[in-house]
Length: 307
Ligand SMILES: [Zn+2]
Ligand SMILES: [Zn+2]
Image (cartoon, rainbow, N blue to C red):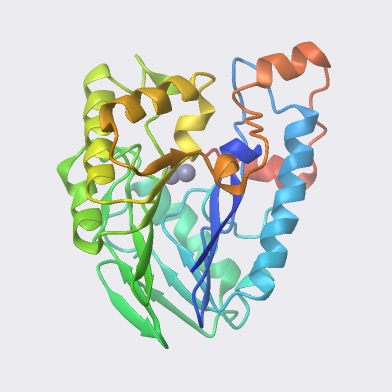
């Protein structure tokens, strides 16, 4: 099975977009990109917007050959109703989405999910809520978790986790669980026993604000447990890599896990390309060249909507 991270914080934007290719099916998960509207009190830098446009084209091109598209929840870094990536990517695809009518918070159920459904109306060959369901497509098995919390509490709503199996191999994407601080977050991993896991990591850049020390420690403990379930590779990226000090957190996790053989790495490391965490480096980017971005219209609208 091929795992191709397309857009992630370590590649320069807010996203978890990934293409998974099994022996007979191409599955695109969360085809969207976004940026922090403000970080360190600063707007997006010119380089960030250039990267956003570049990676949105990468996703657009990957979508052409995809058979299936998965949307794990209705935040703009996971789905795009047409701000930057043309909604035509959904045309003739089999689409599996987070159930927009249950286990969802108000902003996603009243605003974003309906807006998305209107945008892609009539395009997919099929569209269905996937929470807790299982599908067989040729040799490929797609399995979705029941809805789990977007982090430690209900404020940000719920997400579905996705597992893709072919032959004896399983790849799983946790979506936004903020490192998985609650027991419910590791249940699905224990059930599907993936070889490769893509996880977002804790929001350490908000430590002391949206993240408590206690929640951070339970997330790290749960990530350790997930590693010890027999993972070959854990790709930890997205939320964690918004923090300038993400490397220290990864090293701490590696120490906690010890010598059990699995790899822990960012998406950029996995792809063997240089890490380029532009948001975490925004202050430095402005020091190097003071160029706030001129936002193309779609990007301006996307950022007005928030994460
Ligand atoms: Zn989210
Ligand atoms: Zn996200």
